[in-house]
Image 1 (tube, helix red, strand yellow):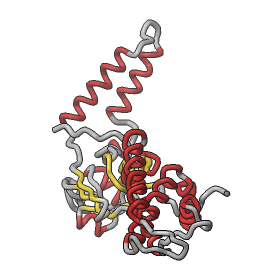
Image 2: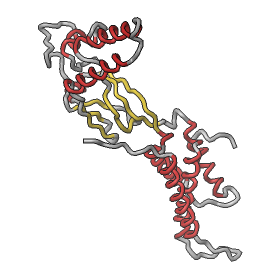
Image 3: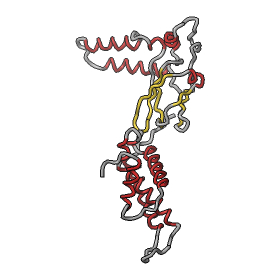
Length: 272
């Protein structure tokens, strides 16, 4: 069998694993689609191969500035942080305090008798301490079901903060002077995003996903047959959907436990 690259092929692979076409699998096509959806949801929620870390760039609209939130794609499941792209006049020029200190450090490290990282490490640690004490961290709230990233500090309009249209007629100069976000400016967030199977079709061939879909369809098969429990077919064959259901349930628990132990990302620790 060729590599599974579509939802349809994934469902067909699961049916063959259960015995089709030699055995009739009493499951409706809509039920198969539902079980594939369930498997994909679990896969994307817990499996480490289903997500990846990315950097998402977004240009602010006037509505975003007014609402103090932006709407992200529904494939983004969590936000790590809002990247610090600089503030104030440092955004528009290299000749700021960080640039000057690093330039001096590079000179010192290349001068005779000073080829070590001790001074550079001390200065960078000092800068990080100052930044931590003097600059606040953006307060972010995000829920994947609303797809809205709230920035509790709020966005500033062109006339907000220390920026004034009377002083700066150019929007870029105004933003640089205020150090705030305005309409048309860009923000970058570090986030976790789902690997979309509609574009990355290799997802459908994932070994865990194929096993999990097969087990879910098998459990659905057992549920369907339970209605005819004990019914005797021609030839003396008796239907027993409970056995199929119990076998499938045990397989599902084994697959989920294996995923949690071997494929699930470790929990993040929250310090406060």
